[in-house]
Image (tube, rainbow, N blue to C red):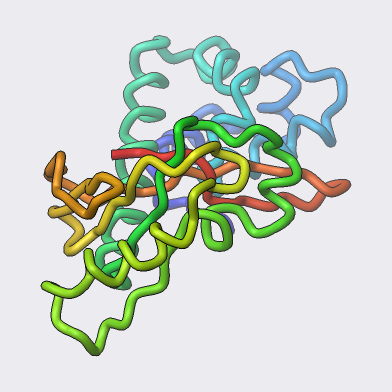
Length: 207
């Protein structure tokens, strides 16, 4: 999705207009021999995928005749804006949930873990949200007691219940609370590629 309202995209668009540069001319000034590839990287910047356009961003100061600090600030502001928007969407759709914990923080076979369902299948514990929050730990514990080993993560060590976006509790194998988090425990993501298709799957624990 083209996001020309993003700080870095806005900076590029406005500066190109001031310098009278077309998209292709900008890419050439960024030292791309393959203009088509460079244009794809520019589109990724406009979409907010800055991690995929590191070379382009690195060459922008010279190409746009701007200081590296100005480019870096626009890139930083872009990352912050996208993160804030994603957090707002996550909070708006939040529902209490629980996750199994194993001895390892990383899956033993990332590819297989990812294509077979990731965190949704192997870590997430379904909760009956019609029941009061006081029952969530008990519900999760009943699953833990039937799960001595977390597939891809080793022997089960406990579980986490996310009660709200800003309140999560880690429990041991007996269902005793052992740690309180000031924000929800969120599995991260692994990115897998099938040809040119990108698949993003929740994978690593973040809290």
